[in-house]
Image 1: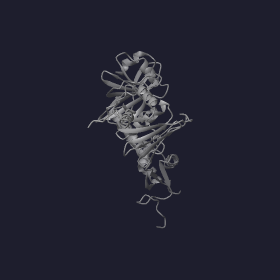
Image 2: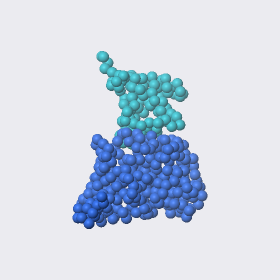
Image 3: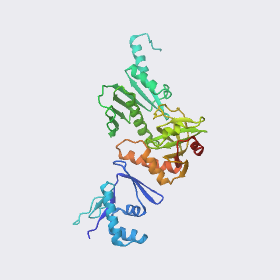
Image 4: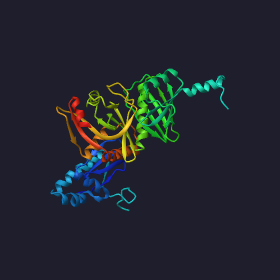
Length: 105
Length: 278
């Protein structure tokens, strides 16, 4: 399995309300309401932590769900958010500068 | 030294000065200048009750009338180039420089074009201070204001039509909300819906925002801050393609629901609903 890394877009406004994240796209004002699981993924989307680790350490630990099932759902979720431009899915972690790290660097 | 207004040049200066009309909505005066006296009179009639010639304008527009063949069907576009806001629709083009607060409008003689420019300008000015225009009716009762937000057909105008006599209508279509310290006030606007009348040029501390829902019985339901923020954002009039301003409006809406009562108002067209409001 190729690792995936997720990073939140800078072009959004977000606020945690009642334990769940509300996100507004600054590009087209679309509003997203995340549930508790999606909120955990969003909060962990630092561009450095592999998605598999986020799922294992945040989702499976907190909710009673199998890793493969949770990972499949998480993958679908992050790709959906990416299609709206509020999250980016990468094959490698971002560097401290915010750019993807070169594997040979 | 006093000016000799009998001199032709002095007379011209006085006439030009008199072409300015200051329209004050929500305590924010905006000056319009036109060299077309019939259009100036049209503005004065359209915004009667909201004119304040002695106010110091927050911004000024020079209006040039054109023969625009295009109508209002086209979507409005609001975008920023440097420090200048550009407002465009089929029937108008306007610019406003935020540094100088000077702008220009090219439009047909249709007063509804100016209505749109005025609403957009206010939405931009309010966004900087945590306020907003809301697709909502509003009214004052017992020195407190109540706002009724809803899409077209939700019952905004109906709420106004069945209102008791002791109520002062602020608008049946576009409500004006401004932050005042840690609280908010609702102001009257000249923007009317099916009621077809300007609201009163008054304001009062905002008590509650109700989100309207047609039903077979009257009922007030509590609503979570999260649901209120989502509902509020659906009804805020906001047009600008600008990331910073979108973020600002989002933050304003979340801040607003943390400070103001919000509820869902299920109602049937029956005056008894006002017994549940306040």
